[in-house]
Length: 292
View 1: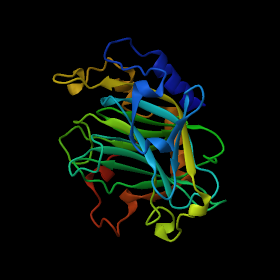
View 2: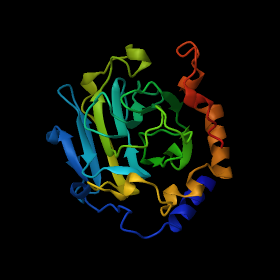
View 3: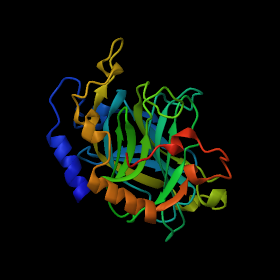
View 4: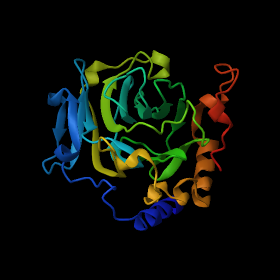
C-alpha cells in the first residue's frame, strides 16, 4: 500500500505537456499485431485482449509508437492450469526481432505444471548483449486475476514493478557504459510462444499440446513517457519536467526500499550478480547499489 501511495503521489504531481504521451482507449490506437492475427481476440467492449498459443503458432503485438524513458504499465492474467513450456513475454525493445545491436527490457513469465508456481524472469540487454537474468517467485497466483506489471525507465535507473512493488532495480553509473540502455527509443511488445526447450525446469518439462490453446489476457495499458519523434525528438536529453524523470523517481523511496528488501529476502530464485561460477569476475554493474 505504501508503494502504491508513493506512485500515486508522483503521478498526481506529474506535469501536463505535449511531451507526455497519453494512450487512447482502443487496442488499434496503441498497438499492431505482429503475427498470427487469427490467434488474437478482444472482448466485446474491446478492452480485454487475448493472445493464444497452439501447436502451430503463438501471437504477439507491439506499440505503434516508440519511447525513450517513462512509466509503462499493463495488467496481465497468465495462462492457467498446465502451462509448462509456455512463455508469456511482456517487454520493451528497440526493434521487432533479435537484432545484434538491440536494447531490451524483459518480463518473461515461465509456465509450469499444474499446481507448481509461475516464475518471472527479467533480463536487460544493451547493444545486443543480455545475460543479466534474474528469476523471482510471486506472492500470488497470476492466473486467477489480473495483476499490474510495470517498468520505470529513466537515465538513473530501471525498475521492474509487480503490483507497484519493486522487484528489480538496475542502476546507471552516470558514465558511458555497456550495461545500461539509455540511448535508443523502444517499442513495447507482448507475445505468447512455446519455449519448452528451456522455460520449465531447464527444458525437462515439455508443453502438453493436448491442453492447447493456451491463452493469456491483457488490459489497461498505460504509458506516461517521452514519445519519440524523428528527426529531433525531445527525448534526446532529459529535462526533469516529467515525474518519471525527477529526483524522486531516480531512487526508491523508503517505503519502496522496505518492499524491495522483502522481495530480496523471500522471492529471488536466481540473480546473475551472485553467480560467481558463471561470472568469476562479476559484471561491473553488479557493484552498483540498488539502495542509492
